[in-house]
Image (cartoon, rainbow, N blue to C red; front, side, top):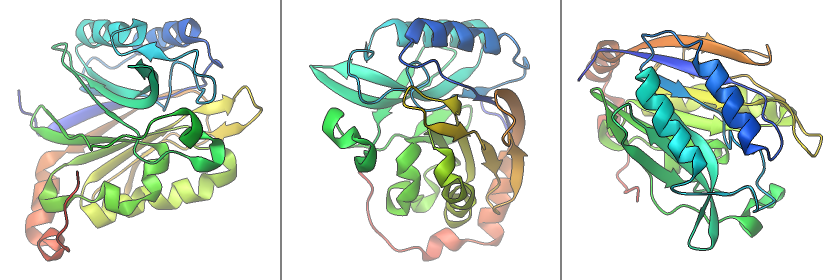
Length: 260
């Protein structure tokens, strides 16, 4: 079913350190408060663990996390997107997912591993970029540090309409988050939604939230701010995006290169 309007819900949440059961229960509680018009719910990075250093909390690709996501998507009739710590073939991945109400599950792994935080020593990097067709929209999910790399985010020939970033972006680098999200929207002529966590993690690192949605013109459409945990709604319009791309076809003058 195609739709001009896409209603998205942002879950800016705290994350219990390496406690999958607690985080799944908390997420389900928040989902009960959803506006029934919601087409897509966006979660923070590693929403079930908040951890990238300890491999033990990793969940198999067909494990409890994915089973819960499929159940919620069907029950609440909404797609759900985010990332979790996945285990597959003896390796660990920061896995972006997109689960539809019909039970389809798409995934791609975080491409750019955060060296300073040790991700490159504990996780495997992704090798492909994912674009999901959903209700007439093409949606590209990326993870946290990927935001800093515009080539990987590049929208070649308007391949996607909405760019999602799931993040555990610490407060100390909040200014970079504030600047880069609208930059990605402007340069790619696409909507951008960035969802970040709040609270303190198990190492005492603080997260400010700052989840936001930007239009293809770089205008802020929704802002969760530093309000802590919040469920925020925003409506996107496909026809206005298409009008902009027709009236101001920047994409036709872009450099040519390929994204894997």
